[in-house]
Amino acid sequence: MEPLQDISPVSVRVLTPADAEAYRSVRLRALHEKPPAFGSLPETEPDLSKTAARLAESNDRFFGAFQSAQLIGIIRLPRHSAPNEKHRAYLAGLYVLPRFRRHGCGRALVREALSWAVKTPGIRRINLTVVTQQEAAIGLYQSLGFHTYGTEQETFSRDGQFYDEYLMTLELNSANLEPAS
Ligand SMILES: CC(C)(COP(=O)(O)OP(=O)(O)OC[C@H]1O[C@@H](n2cnc3c(N)ncnc32)[C@H](O)[C@@H]1OP(=O)(O)O)[C@@H](O)C(=O)NCCC(=O)NCCS
Image: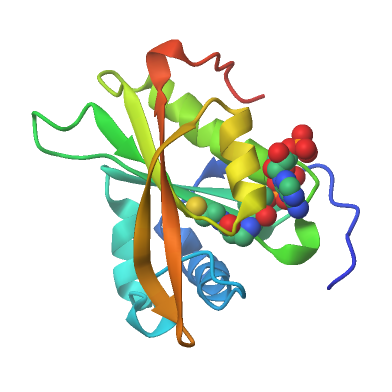
C-alpha cells in the first residue's frame, strides 16, 4: 500500500472539457482497482474526445478534487432527462487515488455533488449502487444519510468472481445537507 500523503488543502469543482485528459487518466486508474469498485471495463471507457464531450453535457455533471493542480478524485452526478424522471439523479464513479485517501477528499466530493443537487430545482432523490465489499464507500454514504434498500446480485464478474451491489438512496428533502465549504 502506498504511503499516506499530507494533502491539505483540497479543492473541489465542476470539471469541464479542458479536464478531459486528467479525468480519463484517474477514471482508468479506478477501473483497474482491485478489488473492483466498478463493473465498467477499462477497454470500453470513452476515448478522449468522447470524454470531453461528456464533460460538456448539462445532464451529466462531473466533479473533481484537486490538490494544487493535480486531479486526485472524481465523482459524477447524471440526472435523468425524461420529464417524469428528472426528479432523480444518480451518484456514480466516486474514486480517490489511493495515496490521497483518508484525508476527507471522498467526503468533500460527495458533499459537493449533493450540494449541487440541492440547489438544482426539481431534484429530490439521489440513488447509487456500490459493490458490497467497498466498506469505505458504504460507510461514507451512510454517514451522509443514504440507506440501503436492496441488493442486486452478481451485477458483474471480474477474474472469475461475481460481485453484488447494494442499492442505496437519499431523499434530499430529508437530508441535513449544509453547502460544501
Ligand atoms: C470511498 C473512497 C472514495 C473514500 O475516499 P476518502 O478520501 O478516503 O474518504 P474520506 O477521507 O473523505 O472519508 C470519508 C468517510 O468514508 C469512510 N471511510 C473512508 N475510508 C474508510 C476505510 N478504509 N474504512 C472504513 N470507512 C472508511 C468513513 O466513514 C469516513 O469518514 P470518517 O473519516 O469520518 O471516518 C475511497 O476509499 C475510494 O476511492 N475507494 C475505491 C472506490 C470506491 O469504492 N468507490 C465507490 C463507488 S460507488
